[in-house]
Length: 351
Image (tube, rainbow, N blue to C red; front, side, top):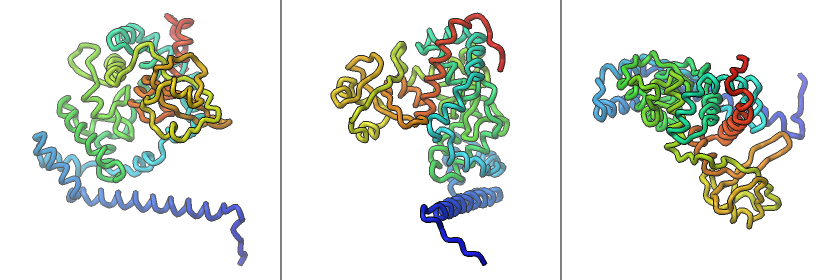
């Protein structure tokens, strides 16, 4: 028998640790699946408590709701996807996936085809068209990829089979059941993302109920329709405090500034540009000294790059809490705005 020593750099121990970690994840997923499968004959205690709550607070019929939950499918792939989000990639990799010539061309075409609706939303909600277009473009490639996962299955899987965020997804399951009842939807007919987001703008059920608008005036808030989606995205940003005409981000030179306290303070703008200047953080583009900002970094191929996040950047992160996400929305929006004048009135070729 050949004996192979571990190399001094610790590669084999790292590989073994990774294998063990994957094994643990597999065990947890299988355990959750087994628990969920057992619930098909009798709902688990947490699911029973959820049903009682829905009956008592919202008047749902107990037997119908129990039957609906028993008939759901546990989707182990969703649990794995939740633990490996694409937004966790280094910035330069995430950017390369989303800022492409094909997406830019599709965005210009979407803007041209929906110019009247976008301008109406911009006037009513005071949010620029390019931000609406970019958001929809990043979320669903302008409505082409809205998800094909059964939303009831997805939310039930995460509500009762994903302990780390079970409370959050039980709340979303509650909102989905209410939303379905309000709209007369068959529970199993609604498709969306693996996290339960719905429609062209990918609203979670709670956001759908709170921020969706009937922008086409047909008496329904239908996020499968582009007009309602555009108005709803604009309304969402307005409700979170979008400031029309204000900048989003500003590149900075950080010099020898002590960065940890600033980077660890979160994305909510909390420190004036004037104070940042005093600490050695120098904006590379014009910005008023009294503007509040936060400091954040992204990973480029040659190391970290630093930016000030202003109010509107924080607003974009209310749509998705990822810095990477907000950065690609901002960059795509800026690119579309720059290229729009030369293509206005001319629909670019479909990629």
